[in-house]
Image (cartoon, rainbow, N blue to C red; front, side):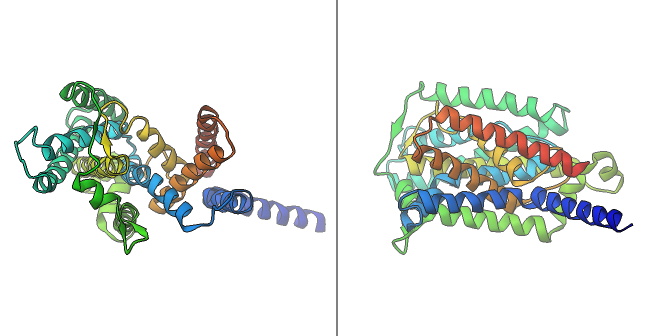
Length: 332
């Protein structure tokens, strides 16, 4: 009898440990990786290294926030990288005076940024219309947009890269506040805070998660599923545009071929590693934050250890597989 009770106690403890691993595995892994870098990586705990990590993760994390909402509805958006590329090219064409003939570069930049973001939002809304009105599978709908938008960006400027070292957008977004806090990091933190609050304290989050859990049941309960999906994809497009602006500000150039290329995969990886279920009905913005920082820190750690980039990609791929496996275990 005593042995049976002991076995039951051990089984409960093992289940408890497994639940902790499933719920906080990414955070535990991130803390372990930080400790590893503090011990073995030179100057890792300096302010410059920390801000460099956060600046590099900014575009991925901004995309990841939008991707979290889309995946929570049971969908996926693989067009965000192409939207980033188009945003950069459109911004350049407007502030340089090539599109609307605005000669003042400051005024051109002030006009270019909102127009580029509106276009990005409309592209996202178009994805939502394809999914809701025309019943196209999300991955197919956003694949269509991915190919089309990337093609438009390349054709518009014949595939050329444009540098703008003196453009106001560079000084506005790549500078520091108070001399030490990067504006891009502030922008990222504000976006995370807004959507973390949105998913925690509003009816919109309940509608979104209901639509992702079971669309038929949500419709019967009076949830405007189609409207929610269109809004979510529009938000994803908007955040892709913001990520595109942050990316070109950091790079001081717009390249229609490489800007945003593969970033959609990094965003999906951050969401998966962070704990949002890929089947929908669940979302964790802070989990995505942990996932994005963890993936970026792995890249930087492997670079510091002189590990080739292709090996780093394999390791990140294995992490995604592990994250999906843990999600299936949690569901079971």
